Length: 317
Image 1 (cartoon, one colour):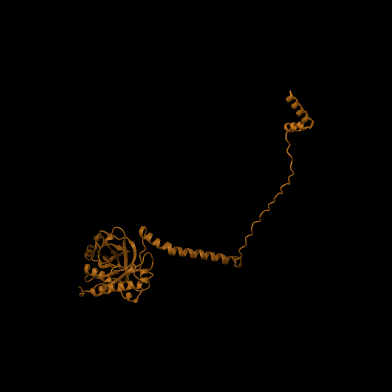
Image 2 (cartoon, helix red, strand yellow):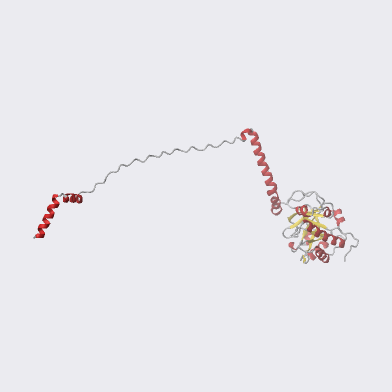
């Protein structure tokens, strides 16, 4: 009972101090949120960028319109000329030679070819009657040797058949710059026995290898000197137009008959003296399957005969 009285007294005290109502109301009433005063965010106004005004090009305004137009036309015409001259012409000549009517040099009557094992088996009975631009073949240059050890596999047959079919024949050596020129000359002389009526021996120089201009010229002079002494006639030098200007542009070599290789041009651009011109490497001749190199002689037939080895005996050791 004392406990109940104590509890009753405690409740009475709480009610007198008004603690219970505040506690109760705090538990029963919903909490109210206090409103905070907020400052409005200022709006950012974007200004449109004005496009940059490009500076007007007044360079051409200094000239009349017809001057500007004329200059443009001349520039285009010059570009077309260079493009055709450098890129189109060489390919058009080769295209015509392969697929169309080849461009044959005019004004030359004495024509010939040069052959090697690349032409394989030749029908000599048809070849002897073949014509180029209405002119019969008069001469044939035949590959004989290369370096110090290579003999063209068809040389003996080709060399024999050329004489049998009444063609003026010649034999050429392909020069290898990395091999001794004296040994190359001796190798050629051992394999090639030229007779009266044959063309002088030919040195085919197309590559310099690792030799300088002076070194190559020395080597070529060595070969020419040995061979000239052996056969008693000046050999013929065969090389390309640009190679001649770069490596053999010397008065010493101008004293030798020059056989120039220059393809896909209407006229020979070389201004020095020359005897033969190899004008295409894609010729078509009766009796030969595939392509063959075609040549012209810079002169008439009596002059070609005068170039051949005479009937007198030459030194043959």
